[in-house]
Image (cartoon, rainbow, N blue to C red; front, side, top):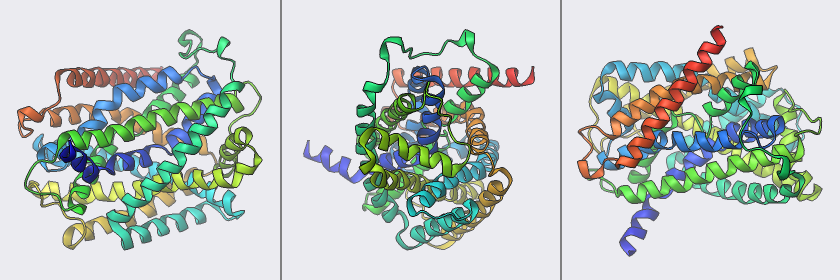
Length: 428
């Protein structure tokens, strides 16, 4: 038992990095908008999305722990065409995702400091600050910062949601939407909500890379498989936490905005102010500075994980086009890997600021574009992750069980059918 606990604490961290990446725009913006527009009607959709996308995310940690290599090596083994497909999907979403996350964080920063600076300028400062933090502290600082901010946000969000419950009329509430009454706009919003609930499936690749980075940071053996149970327990803690917080944000949106003529603001700064008011309205005005700081901290953690995740994946992706990955060889802290990482980070920052310059006026349009792109790519990535986790290089004893494989196929079918229905609806 003591050995199991020791393995868990050595593995603990990447699951919270997942939570830090997920509990951002998808929760503070999309889940709040769901509660504001539909009351509790989309809670069933939120929970279903979390359940059916669970295997796709889990397989990132699972593959890394079982093989000692990243999920991108699993893609490479499926063919260079698969790597190319992942590269196209990444290039299609990385700039809009980073832009959406950064501009909401910039809005909260401006609100917290009382600064009226231009959102693009504030976003540029944030991206530079995140880059500086990663340059100085690298993975170790990222791991430590996320643990603190996720703990703070979880406590404050659950407390606010609990105090908001008396404001909701549960007798008249429905936890599933009346699809017969839905319009095209409703289905479009649902697609955007599911796209980032709890996050984009791309993060499974980041999760595998963070799992390996945690192994290296704690001095784990690079030549042997990790303790798969400990790694998956760490992931499950982060994943269940993200699902709980998504429901909390829906409750807050339903309690404060639904049926009260309060429409979500279009601008990043305006919506940031509404986020803080959700908490202040339930916890009391005294809590506004504290909650503003906590909300900014969680969005900062999301920005940090995105700014690290995309370049980390791109740097390894470039290596996988050239050669196979051997267990223990992955190193982005020096040499060729470090140069590729920083080149990708600079390109990511410039491209994201360019997207902001084009789509800054409407926050909802920017977020919906990013989430819809993620939604359309989700079934493809979920299928690739399933193939990797059940591939021959994964030892038979460490492959996912029958129930997990079945849930994975259900998720792939659900996401694929939903994506096809959305495309058909948009074309007619």
